Image 1 (tube, rainbow, N blue to C red):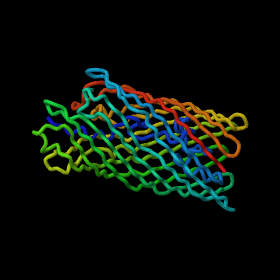
Image 2 (cartoon, rainbow, N blue to C red):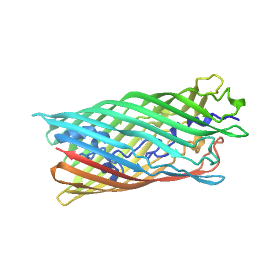
Image 3 (cartoon, rainbow, N blue to C red):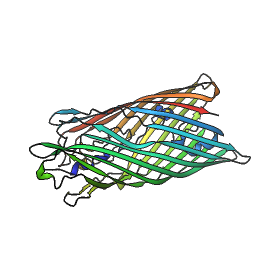
Image 4 (cartoon, rainbow, N blue to C red):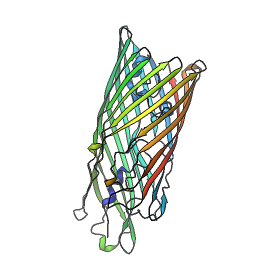
Length: 401
């Protein structure tokens, strides 16, 4: 029997570090604090986490970095099966320039990176090969964010916002159960769109409050399905053809507070993802003889918590960082399966940075995320428990003038 329902694994969260398929690693400095950087006003990673805070410091900033994610998932069912995934390496580029006018500051920031993505490869012989063997999803973003800052007495107020240009690619392979033999199908698609963001911050006597909102966006994918080794009796339904689907990116609201006292800084972020917009998922095939897919997902909105500590030493040239995060899964057990092996996540991180002369600095962060064990109650899922871990290393180089 030819099965098409598992094509919805486009949303598989293999290398995603935040719950769902969001990527929290957007810079080495922030990663050292478990990405609790919505209110950290002197971070080189603010072009992603809160561009409005860049307006507090005039001048030019540039930062280039990458995060290396080593995901490992397990499905403990008929047999213990582990993924064979190569490391994911989401890059980031951040640029900003702030000009100091007499009564205010104003400027622009640019962020280019991958805020959403996943990637995983299961063995070709594992029991779930008719659902998924490999998946690669990347959502690239380029955003432009004008910012402005003013001061009222001892209070500094900064605001920003602007467009987000999105482009996404997806690739998926899985086996086809054709009774007497096994075929294979490979899908590939592309999509693009425009969303927006808004951000702001208030700073007073060492305390900073920050907020950053990123709008939701539906991406409409157009692509193709390539069928291989399909027996003649199934050739009418399993033909190479065009396919389409829609992927909804969630809204994101982050609210943060930081307190700096001498060379100590404490940070706390609360982050809300609007995953409840992901109620169903469908695959539309061009050939009317190939059955389309429409399945419930019923994801729920989530609140995550991130905390960080930053200690500056040696005349603030050396930075040491630590952080923790709790990130619950949006996927209910009733719709969970190895095709979407999401779970509640606990993360711990450490980081360090060094400021050279001439405005150059480097940062590095290490950490690990544990995907707590879950067992689906979905009657259509392969029986078995799901768990995993995602160690990571993030590096970055910054220049400030």
